Length: 134
Image 1 (cartoon, rainbow, N blue to C red):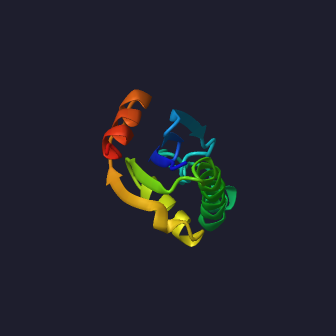
Image 2: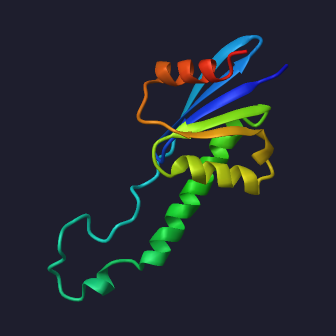
């Protein structure tokens, strides 16, 4: 059974559409990742010795990267059996997922990586169906 998959992804959630001869299935995976690390979210620190009160940027970046790796691994598991994969979405997550798949030796299944704005689940499913229409 041939399975074709489409993934709309950003850092907060992934919507996966699986198409096969038996029909269509839509899955949603939420990342539960904290926001990308920033110093103090736009507020100027007024406390003395601010540098000692805030964790080092590199440790926060490592934690964020580790959370992203877990998220991408979970997303990859959902469409591992697909032979064709369309990746689309806003921002950097689509490129990061592509690199994750290439590092996992699954890059040959990727047929396209496209930019896309925010979309509803129905719009995502329609885009995947239209892309793989034969």
